Length: 168
Ligand SMILES: [Zn+2]
Image (cartoon, rainbow, N blue to C red; front, side, top):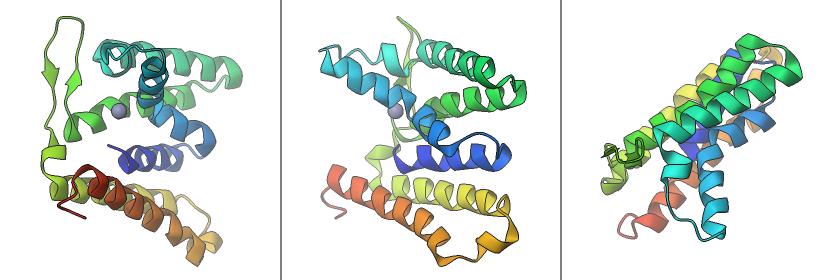
């Protein structure tokens, strides 16, 4: 999942407007970043980035850091849930490790490129509507605000087309 992670970050932002979106987006992508960094060091074991164990530890670490910096326990919990949402979202589209020696699970929607686009775009629209509702009325009508979900949807279709040339 790609754009869906951004959508989940905006949903967290809608629920907890105090938390910076500049923090929520990287947190929503954290397992992918860990994976890229580890790949850079030649470690391709996704257990370190995408297993249930690693996201449980990672989400606790970011929540503790956030709480230490802000003393807002409710917001810290939402930061942790944003991190955990990465696993849930990836579960729908791909296949993910659980724990060392445990099974790999997932719905592997990437095999169905159109289904993947529909799920991710649906997620983007739903999260965007929730986010928009959290904005003050004056900024809701701005055309620029619509560019964000449209850009995410374009990005998602672009990714799908790269992964599955028959779609593009
Ligand atoms: Zn991922």
